[in-house]
Length: 291
Image 1 (spheres, rainbow, N blue to C red):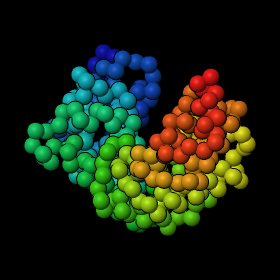
Image 2 (image 1 turned 180 degrees about the horizontal axis):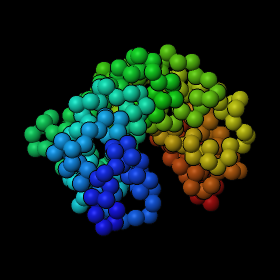
Image 3 (image 1 turned 180 degrees about the vertical axis):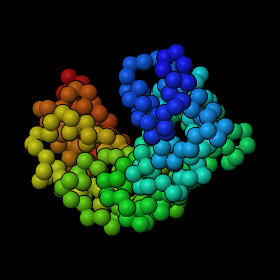
Image 4 (image 1 turned 120 degrees about the vertical axis):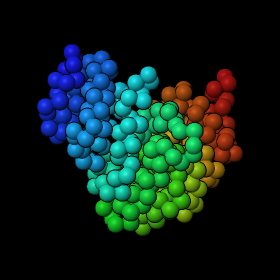
């Protein structure tokens, strides 16, 4: 494999995909798996290989963590070119894997764009993916956790399409929030903030559930990591200019939390100031910080 990509040319496509996934998990030079994929793509272009859309997704997911300039043009855009016409026919699991692998390296998607708007595979991909997401959510083929994860991936990618977003929001509003859904509030809020979606009924529903979890499920005082989670949740609501006295009360309460670090205390003060909420706890914490 290190000497020549032709060493894997006799392998059937499923075995090549398995070898590539294993190779990408090892500490080998990035050039090695990317060279294998480039040679594989050349054979596909010559008609010597048949690859299913799901296999393209697996290949893309395997090399995305490695595919950086100057090797970018050798793999990712060529795979996407093969994949875009088939995105609508992907299985729900494959579509989720495609969104996840892309979101993990979202910053790379601006590289190698066509100068003609909407003509390159990279430019067509957001529309194809969001349309497929819309159909899968409407068909009820993802549970709520998967819907939130995909929505978060779309937020990281900045892929906003009104129809797909409306379908996801409708699903979120129809879902009754339960105890297992508590960890999903932060990614859901993060997606709304990233896509600039100020859906007041959903945000209100999220805040009420977060406050209920804080009252009945969370330990008192909150551990340090849960204070960070609270700050992140509040930060996303601040980006959306959403006000909640209940949430502000929880933030103020954490100023007296012995587990809160100095960094977290300053972050709590900043969040409350941005909310224009100055309770007695705020004044006490300010006095201690300035002392």
